[in-house]
Amino acid sequence: MKLVILRGGMLPAGRRAASRDPAPTGRHGVAALSDDAEGWALINVAPNVAEQLQTDPALRCHSGLMDADTRSIILTDAQIDHVTGLLSLRDGAPIDLYATPAVFEVLSQQMPVLQVLQRYCGVHWHVIPVAGETLSASFRVEALPTLEFTALSTESQAAPCALEPGTPTSTGLSVAIAVRDVMSDQRLFVSQGAQVLGGTELDWLRRADCVMLDDHTHWLDEEAQPSVPAWRAQRKVMLRGQRPEELHRASTDGFEVAYDGMVIDL
Image (tube, rainbow, N blue to C red):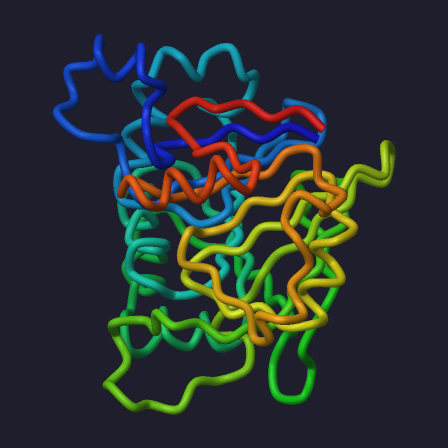
């Protein structure tokens, strides 16, 4: 299993000094995930990622990432910073989109991104069946046949801006993603979008070899959270974090702050 961070958090210090960008490349990092470094899927898609996939020469060393015949995208929620990048892919290949019924409803009704895409590149819908009383579900991504995915329903402190304030949230409007490589048994846990993680998510997190969290992640029961250094994960990555206090907390807990082009091999 291989991950490449796209527009994720901050550039390394040396590259920041040499970069023409006046600021970090983005606060809403996108993880590109591969099982064999040929097929790829994006976990969420920030607005500036499409341009990077088309033009960034640094990505050419990752075979298939820039020139995929189809785009596979897994959405953890319908937050605007995670979905508006879909529109930037409208002139490319058809999109294989994996999301829960609640997320598809937002993107079809309140924020009709999918109708626009259907008129351009086309969208192949793949429903992740987390809804109602079903709080978790396994699914597969066609482009990544050796990876097993599990979506876990979570609460989020950042609701989609397309919803009116106070609108009741549905099961599956926010999910954490757990991934297992059936060949190597390596495991990944990803939580984005200010999610609130409970005991079930914590059980999956404890078994992960790599953990990728948002710096606004919260715990349903703070006292139940184990000491971060005691987690099994050998790689702990913070997908956002730009304020000094965030960076200090991350380094103290053994987290690496994600940066554009960061590569993780599991």
